[in-house]
Length: 86
Image (cartoon, rainbow, N blue to C red; front, side, top):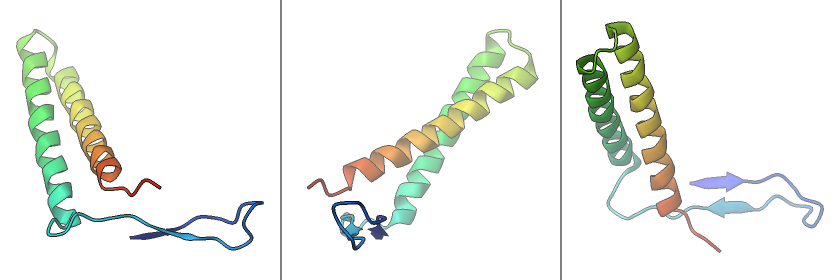
């Protein structure tokens, strides 16, 4: 993947930055892993909230928040782990 950064005062031309990709692991696999992890964490959070006496709509809201947070965290970690640091 190539990302072009805007021109800075020190550099007139934008320079493309290439991020390394782990060979043999397509991006779809990482996205699938993040989605599965998010769904599992979200289900666990929702079920534990409901079992703890929280009303069902709030338990669903807690599960959805946990699911979204897990997906974002997993994708951010994958991007950080596969990025080239210069």
